[in-house]
Image (cartoon, rainbow, N blue to C red; front, side, top):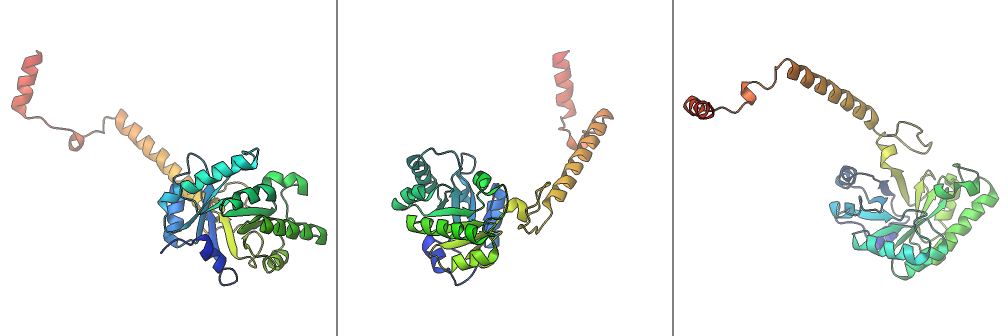
Length: 261
């Protein structure tokens, strides 16, 4: 399977749902690609910048860390480096003015509307955005501004499903639902939520498909048990045994002992 380019993703708008997951580890990226995921994303940094090369058959998105860049030129420089490191698209949670600078240079940008966690103070905290007509209109206007700026996709986070669907039908970028219903063009989840690795709060919009936290707990208990057995064997001299030792011919041993005595 070849990776979906931006053009391919645009052509899927209104045709079929696109599956998109955010990963944090190499093994998650590889597993998602092997499963047939359409899009994989992660934050762009020194630890993750090689991830795209691990999954050449899957559309890969690198995200620019919000708050790291003081101007559009700084964001553009890192976006271009991320593209050099294999990204086919770039997430940018900054303003339409910044997105326009990136898009003008040919960087395929995913913008962010609705609940944008670093900016949540403007909407009263970590809550849904667009539950009043006024607020929903503000979300729509933001989408249109990003569309005009050249964004090819819009992440819509915790927007009422019917609002997200109505906007999706009225904008040209593909829309990506994170807790915004099935009426968007793509559905997005964080791998930690999907795999059940979170031990604290689980977002209302997240669906947990596995319970890896419990498996990790079980693995930790197995580690402790194994270490205890090793300590006990060591103290009783039950390990190592002959099967673990390296042997020496008796003649050579006698000669060695004679040499050192």
